[in-house]
Image (tube, rainbow, N blue to C red; front, side, top):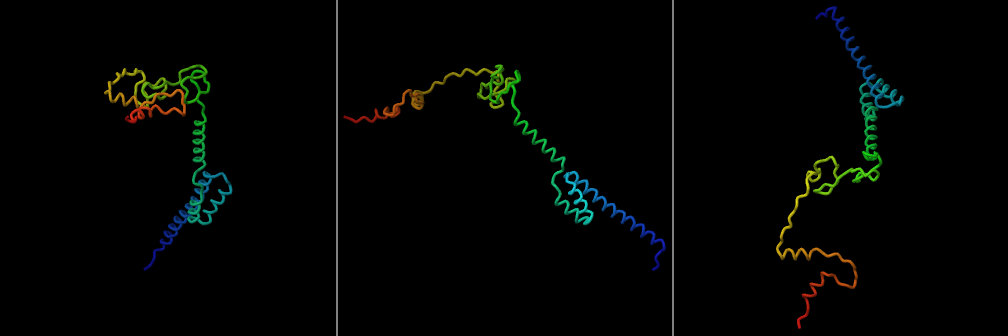
Length: 194
């Protein structure tokens, strides 16, 4: 079998294209590595070492670089720092009275300086709500509602007496020698028979 004389031209052209592709890939890896390390650190020695690592070892050098490179870019680190500072600023921010701009605390109901109404107590649950809220977010009660008149329930006489004995009366003067009022009815029941 005889090879055509123009085959040599085709083979040399194919080798040239493959060689150009390999050289472009090689240079592209070096440039990409250099740009990537520049976005991740400001250390000039790290820039040079990463580019040399890929230039000398090619694809294995690129794999080594991918393993040892910094995890975040400088832009990501800057964004994270800004977010942290914003959160810290919000935590350190002092509350100001909307009327007189004096410092107030979160649980103030009125401003101690100008007596401006800062918060109201919910008529349903007693928690603090802002004056412009029309409904309490804790119990769901509308703030313009007045508490409904509750009629006292009539209890059975036995239940009323039981309730009276479970609620202790306030003791004004505590004397350790005087026995409890609770013990008195029990002692009256235990009198010896004569």
